[in-house]
Length: 314
Image (cartoon, rainbow, N blue to C red):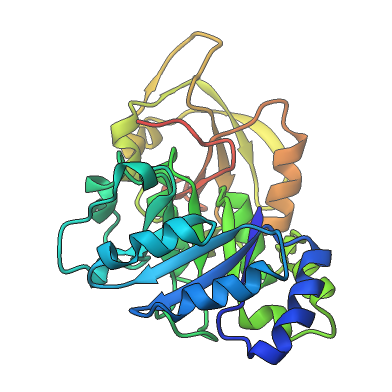
């Protein structure tokens, strides 16, 4: 997972030291935020003198047209435009199409992005209030993010807002490609330590049922085919095989097939398994599942969880 360090709110006297430490820690991007202001481009000029690490810009504006020239001039590799603040249709000049994506609030219905998925090369999901640092990530955001991840698996997704190591670990397990971190990076005893913590897969304390998307019917669009005998991981992370049940097929609008090739690969998992145990069990499988189907004690399908291997489009 890539880490983009949010430094726009740092005081200029602290910038050089922080950037030096962040570069040594190996951050992948510097994240810049602008709310209807050109001052961010002056900041980008100062920052560029301190680092060769690429920049990404989150632009909150009613009219991005007035910023295109500055974006061209300031070596900004990636840009996302906050859709909720636009007062005109989203339009990007031809020479910037490969670098300008969109940002949306993660609690907005995921279908909202459908109009942009063909033109936007990336998606930024805001899990806290845009432009305000120090927000707290809420557990229900996992389901919101998962829905975007499943509906638009071909689009690289960045998550911004309240991401701490335990949250980062879950996002990595579901296949999120990048996170933005700001205030957390500067709270530990060292920046090297906080960056390392964000990259550590600390899944302790989470159960699968706390992070799944409880809408299995979203998979109806994929016309899933599964074998008659499926791989099941119980709550103790023990792996076995089971015969597929008709009620599972109905929940997913799936069909069984007898061939040995299943383009959409699933693993079936008890919903109360600890995520750390689940991750360990996944690594022991002789195949790479696209998604986990959660089951309760009554063998009912209760939700779904995408995995990093899930990259196929509809």
